[in-house]
Image (cartoon, rainbow over all chains, first blue to last red):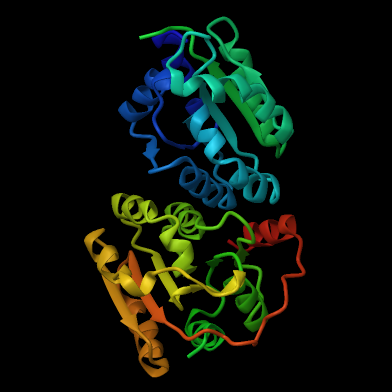
Length: 162
Length: 184
């Protein structure tokens, strides 16, 4: 996603009820995170499961929360997602940067990137692929899902190589 | 002192204030000693009680939030201490019940007796750090900290429970969440 749209996306979510943005940095989501840091609304955790833990604590306090992470970190967190987020039915929003989406991405991302759609499917996690052309619609969707008490995910494919 | 005795002492002073308790026997003991709506029993996701506690503490700055952690749990999420340090929650009290074993899975060693968890907490800028293995001393510490600002850690060195098993939690996870949310 383009820089401008990532910034707009952060502002849109922050202005529409999402109070907490917690996560582990990812280059695909760089501009989203930088915008949040500028607004002093980002909490950086040491790893993804920790971020999920903090976010569930905030959700226990009725404060709508999003976590941002790379798909590798999403895979690290599978058991936390099943035994905390889904077991207790926390309406947490995931924003996932998808490395390994393109076949020529760096080697460490290839396998995990390839199975990303299957992981989401196996978990039974509601998700949408978010891009420049549909970001607003996707944001409205996660806001509505989270208000209705559902866990949901937005996945940002990395469509560039650096 | 065994964990259940330590929890009984802590509860005398904590009363109805919110507690986030780690998985395994820690949550089971708390449930058996004093079940209440403001107990959040984390029955899975090992390691994350301190992180959940941080999230609750940051959103409820006027309430004291207690975390009942274990040595195996905190060693699995040491990064949490640095994040707690970065956020400086004045209302967070982090109690670690340390028996140096994973008692819930059959008492395999955690190696917590080879390191100083209290020194790690100090290095992570916890405001007050205590270590005790004595019941009277633990009671004094938990009374004393009422007037102190967090983050506070109390490392309680305990004995293995040897057969005194608390029963499993009979409340559904969703109900645990809902009643905690209503209480806070």
